[in-house]
Length: 152
Image (cartoon, rainbow, N blue to C red; front, side, top):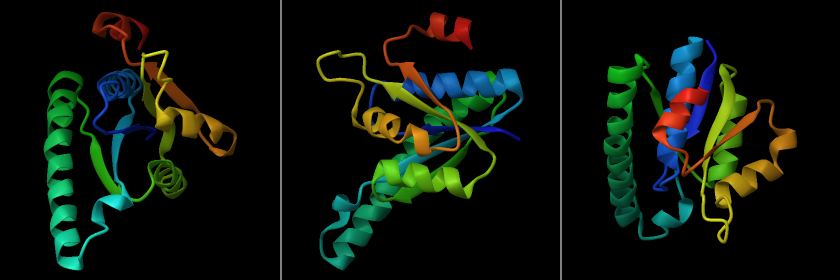
């Protein structure tokens, strides 16, 4: 089964990327893999404190994921998988894509603020697009829900 890999983070544009991935998966008989990456600099503390912070970060991610997962299951009939990795987001995306041959498309949400650019992850991944074995779909962050549904 072809999976859409979408990145779960704290950005506003993440919502549209999630919607797009779920809608496309539902319309094409695919699946959704949701990747959340915990940056390594969050744990540069004493070992005990770092372990507690890592556990708390994972719990926050799981709660955030469950909001999207419930919507995907209830509205789209898609049961997404959650993958949590630690490291630099772009590197971990590349690793996940190389480790899971079912991933067919990477879906990223782009910041709609033209002064700030599309966001660091979109910028980084588009620079590396030539070395990815799959296409990248970039979803505008300010695309309306209705328009998103119409194009998927």
